[in-house]
Length: 224
Image: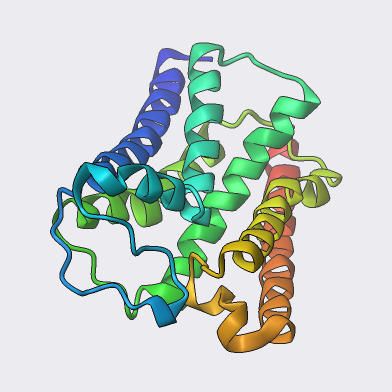
């Protein structure tokens, strides 16, 4: 792999770490003042004490978002590729492809379901731009340009859903125990299990279409 290709892998990893890191530091130290009082009836994440007293709770909540999971997946796999661009193996290849799918779905779902009502301020606006737009676009472009090539198998169109489905299961179990949810559309208390599970099923179907597109692109570029 050329030096330019390795540089792209490193930049991709750095963007993912930057978005994740800025969000966590901003969250832990509450660098952005709260503009609204927490509403317990919303059943959404939040309600922790201000300042460092509530830092641990906010840190825990922040890792309940799919955005966080997807950016961590990209950061870890791209860092591993930067350190060893020749890294191979089915498990790692599937983790790489999982990160690619997850970050793509993060961008798509944010745009469709959250962007219209989201209004991040200050440092959150920076982390939001990185996590929902810049890192996803960079990850897709780097995958297209650098690869690794020949590692998105048809079986991966199923395997890439292991972590996303684990996330959905965790969200439902945690919600049932703590009565709080990361996103309004996952709020079982408000919408019921039938509605939320139907939405989750639709997300998985949509994600599978994306996975098939990546598989098709992989087939085309390996023939070129």
